[in-house]
Length: 405
Image 1 (cartoon, helix red, strand yellow):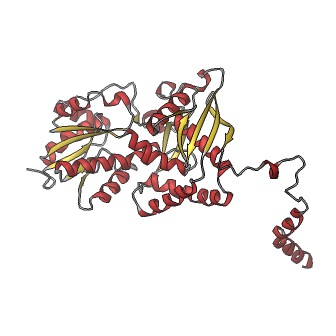
Image 2 (cartoon, rainbow, N blue to C red):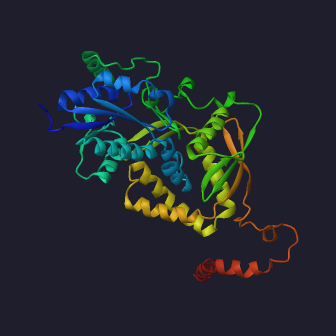
Image 3 (cartoon, helix red, strand yellow):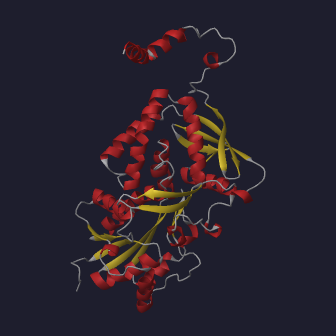
């Protein structure tokens, strides 16, 4: 008999790590329900190895692994990058943008399997609980959500390991990498353990996607990225699907030590936390996208879009991907990208990526006849005098008033 209310079948977002392995068993023990394990393949590679076997060993009645890499890149990462969305000026939102897709697929499985509950491994201190659950309620306002970290009395890794040992749960016990990490096609994040000291430098062996910049090649590498309506479609002339393109840029960026960020961020629940991130491909993509925008995008449209980006980034960070305000703002952003067609040439060298060229055949707003420092016949420089005086009019009036006083 359930101790927590009637639940017949629950779908658990399952990674196979310590937390979700214990949650799987805990749901069976505490709720007396069947548990369907579900893992989203967003490009985390070998981390998904043996997931079905682990889930069955721990008591899952079935296990689903869904390949969402292309949907993730096409429908979530790329729309976000059309906005150049970076949270608090530093964070590329790699974990934040993955959560709504994970929740969407989880709810699809729940509907297909006739489950009456969904569960996740997010703690009561973090952002992910908000991101998952807002998305769940978007798809089913009546769904039963089980968040074990807000219910059980286990509050430490030691307590979790004791529970695992008691119930014979096969979980990793190595202390070599004691920090928490989250990986997908866009990034990998690290939190906890030594990183909880904001003064302590992250250990070099922690990094996964990139070499240390000082160990990167001594020769720079150039990469050309082509865009259509704000989306990257080709690298060095080779057209690639969104997921394959992002993977290619990760490879290039990681080779040159690009995309490492160490930051203190403001969580939605109110506390500050330290995160270390590797986003090699995303860093290159954002730099290239801005370059093509700079030659194809109207100034006032760009400034209007840019004024809204901090709010847009906060919507994603805080879990409001499916909210109407994000959808409406996305429409404005996508309209602004209709002319963002062209190529950017990026120089990769020892942790840095820098625009060294940009071009657009049909949509360039750069006109050499107007911009040149040489002689021209299209711009009357004396017209600038009246323009400047009108711009300075309010300052001139204020100056007259001061002189009168």
